[in-house]
Length: 93
Length: 176
Image 1: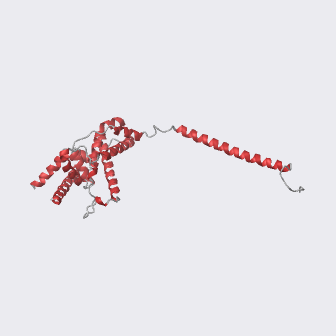
Image 2: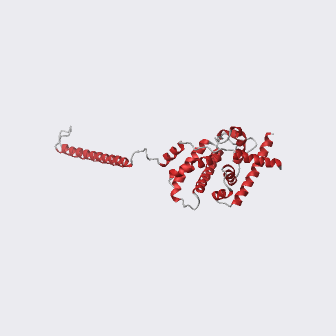
Image 3: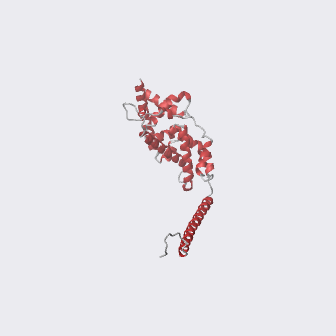
């Protein structure tokens, strides 16, 4: 019984002797970095602007490709009508 | 209360409580960081039905217990078999993780052994022991934090001490 009381006293003594420690200074920096993660990133309007610019460029490219195709088609028709195509047939049918 | 004021007031409380639960400086820093992030997120919903200090204690205790559970899950799936005793299925306390800066050098061995047994206690008993014996809170304050009656806390404390005494005796007999 006395030994058990001594053990209990020892437990209380060991736990009571644990000292308080100051929180590290960098902890505050880390916490605020977690709470404000967007401070060092690109502003959101930059993202929207870049997206719009890329969309415009894409549409311009598509329009240019379509224009080139239609131009080349009308050129083919003109060449054929004027019989300018290289054709080794002696007579035109 | 503004968050920065709250941080200045309770930073040491939170950090030390994390140390008592996790017994590792690095883990306690990570846990304290997460606790304050949670506090920041929940500050707008704090209803003042409990004291602010009690509320901060509750968030810290719950987070530390979650960290311990997560750590145990990781260890359960570990492939390092040398962590296990040959005759027991229990995980051995990894002494290399023990790094509590608040423990005096001359008491480190004894306190490390004691914490090894404390870590095996059920969550409620461990919390009652840490809050009363290490944090020095009264039964009433501890009961408010744990959402129990003072008598329940006292009962948990008695059971914790009984388990610790038995475990320490067993540990001493194993060494002999």
